[in-house]
Image 1: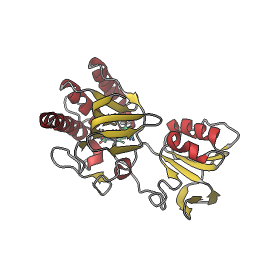
Image 2: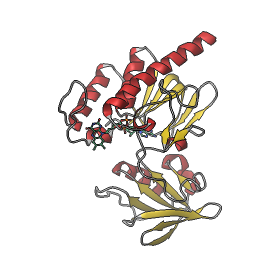
Image 3: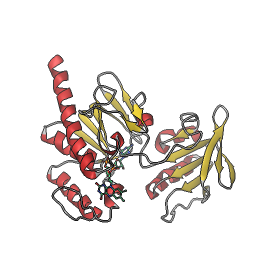
Image 4: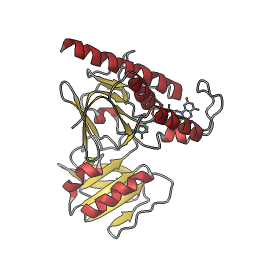
Amino acid sequence: MDRYDIAIIGTGPGGLEAAITAKIRNKNILLIGNKNLSLKVEKAHTIKNYLGISDVAGEDLTARFKKHLSDMEIEITEDKISSVYAMGDYFALQGADVMYEAETVILATGVVLGKPYPGENEYLGKGVSYCATCDAPLYRGKTAAVLGFSPKEEAEAAFLGEVCEKVYYFPQYKEPVELSKDNIEICMDKPKEIKGEMTVNTLVTDSGEVSVDGVFILRESVAPSQLVPGLLTEDNHVKVNRKLETSIPGCFACGDITGTPYQYIKAAGEGNVAALSAVAYLDEKKRKM
Ligand SMILES: Cc1cc2nc3c(=O)[nH]c(=O)nc-3n(C[C@H](O)[C@H](O)[C@H](O)COP(=O)(O)OP(=O)(O)OC[C@H]3O[C@@H](n4cnc5c(N)ncnc54)[C@H](O)[C@@H]3O)c2cc1C
């Protein structure tokens, strides 16, 4: 398995700028996220405060970001990381069905808005999962609820439909659902709480209760403390210093994940600092060897 110098998780302005800076510094990088970059950039109507571009639609800024990546021959690995493990002198990143390794990691996954569901943290790993591909085998022949936060997650629900006996799909978005499988039921009621005993057994909604063995919560981003076990956070943001170092040596963070203000230029600026700090960390590590 390749071990990268720097793994960058997230393809918003923070992660993209980190990737560009790290590439300029000749590091072997892995940029993981979405080939369409960031919904928060793409969906913006008009952006007026990005330096050098006085008035730009989100779609046009996305196109410019893509061109910048392509000019610099930076590839995006389309995947969603569910966990990052600090292994001592390197990091292991759990993708949907691949494990990646890197000497350093930059977290640029944006902010997770909204509170966790009651019971979500309590039952994490005991019936609550954030990754269908990773955990589907645990629910073979069982019943699962899937809370999908974007149409992209329908593929995950379809996969669960192949493994589980029954899947309840709760779309948390406005677009029409295009899932059609006999054992997948589309539910438009609102999930409220996850309950259980030793493990999950019920999803409570605004119109009743559904008996389930597991609940898959498929959001755009995973809360930082769940993404990286042991990482210090404050109000759901990663705690960083001015070098964008986190509480775990070799792990850096940039963009909305580090706190307000939630702004493109702040995310991109932090991406630059985080990459330079990761480069300095790698250089220092090499000197000590
Ligand atoms: C509608 C709208 C309009 C806005 N307008 C403005 C504006 O005019 N000016 C301004 O300055 N700011 C604006 N913002 C705020 C701005 O969008 C954010 O501050 C900025 O996008 C943050 O960048 P980021 O790189 O931190 O994260 P994001 O842009 O949120 O990108 C995070 C990326 O990480 C990926 N990701 C998340 N989790 C994982 C994972 N586990 N594995 C792999 N990939 C993952 C996501 O798919 C996404 O691609 C606006 C936001 C919205 C929603």
